[in-house]
Image (tube, rainbow, N blue to C red):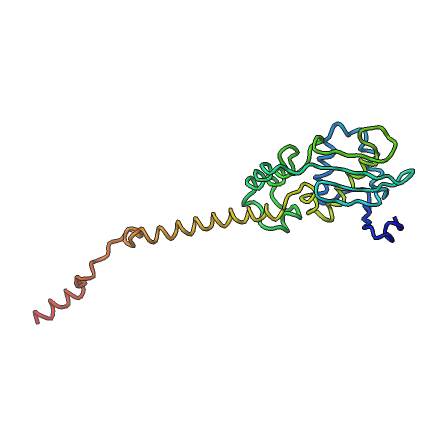
Amino acid sequence: MAKRKKQGHAVSPVLITGRAITTTFWGKSWCTNLENYSDYENRLPRGRTYARNGSVVDLQINKGEVLAIVSGSSLYSVKVKVEAVPQSRWSSICKDVAGAIDSLVELLQGTFSKGVMDRLCLQETGLFPSPKQIKFSCSCPDSASMCKHIAAVLYGIGARLDDEPALLFKLRTVDETHLVAQAINVTSLVGEKKSKSRARISEDTELPDLFGIELAPSAKVPKSKAAKAKVTKRR
């Protein structure tokens, strides 16, 4: 890896302190989704061990692709390809959570309601990929569909999302700012409709009707003044 650095290659190892691979919302959600893959359950435990002991010596997350190097009996190259979120699904996600996310900071920190979290984390209709949407390969001699090196990289992705949650959106080839912008636009439209509604009440409703009172016509002399005039005349 030192040689790679000298050659100008970016090297980004997965460093985990303690037993927990992930500690934040996005990292935990990624690993929870991963562990729901029944096809992978036999290989995941070895992958967790490799991830914890620092075997993922380089991990780069790009649009739709993760490139990694894992240290075992040798150095092995791992490639993970993840399908982009279909545009129709992304539009549906944005629509469903519109008005529920206030800022990009809130989104990346995962500090929103459980309803929004559940919607974003769905496997088939949310941001997290299903097994059929992931393809991977490793240069190791293991003939299994998923080797321990690949499993380690998949956990490494979760650990990386702890530090850089925006990488999930990059990996799924969607723009997280669009999600927030959509939410803000809906909130603004609701506020604008309320303002217009209040303005319409003021414009369309006469003051007496609004408050339920009768006002004397301006041309008439108030009763108090008329009574005073009669008294003066008698004198």
